[in-house]
Image 1 (cartoon, rainbow, N blue to C red):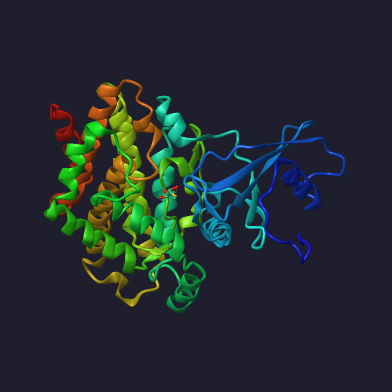
Image 2: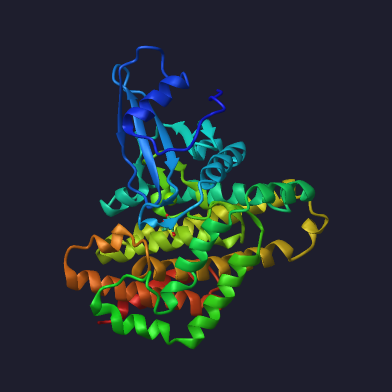
Length: 399
Ligand code: SR1
Ligand code: MG
């Protein structure tokens, strides 16, 4: 579908989004269309264009030249829209069942036109409502295993991998993560955001030299290890789900990064939701953490056996050692994400939405304690079930 060569960037309005959908021929001439801007994320505009007669719709996502969560004072590259549409297409070549179809993209307008997933719900919202999504971890474990393996030096031609990595150089979005996940929450930085009641706990993190050393090591991994094409922002707000279906969206943070990062972010957001629930409703989240890891290792190991292009693939102990490193890193990354979503910029509704103040502050204290334990104790964890032990220990603390 071709657009005029003269297209210049300007933010779409609802009527502009309808006009674009018509111009692209995505609906037959004369279709009665309605449109709503439904973006509730931190960065972009999202338009839902619907055919009133059939109820069928499309999504038009447009990057803004700044971070919506902060405002125009935080300029942000429009190139992230190309990264996003290319990442969706790359992921679709390995796991089409877990990503939306991309119908059209335009680099100048910074838009991606894609499949309407409104029959599904953002997983974070559903989890906050108490849903459990029984297949979520199976699907995400498979999504992560396949996308990581096939885009890595084990699953694709190693020369082509380097070329693919060039397409996903994403410095500005990486810098957001380097700052917001790996740096600012651990220092007295203006981007931080927390209730006064947490100041004592937060200052303890700022003065924790042992913690800083471990976060520094994890940050170095994020800065330097280009293992595979990672999603880069795989929290539960980047996932649409139902009881039977799962779709991963929003890979605008995608780049060649460390194997453990997506797993860690997913773990963290499951654990944050668990912390927001009464104790008797936490079990499905802990099971999701464990199942994600089990499915990831099973699928990754099968692919390793069957499709590995690296001559050392059959070397005794190599796969086991790599999986161990991925696990330890994922646990550490999870710890950073848990802390960041509690006291940094861009919180999660799971914790912020707890209405009772004392319960909320207690849940946040537990989150800080859990995040710290995940980072500091990661090397002593042997099995994924050990995450449950750390989680239970944080619940046992009285505040
Ligand atoms: C300024 S962007 C804040 C956060 O929103 C995105 O979803 C990422 O998680 C980012 O860190
Ligand atoms: Mg996002």
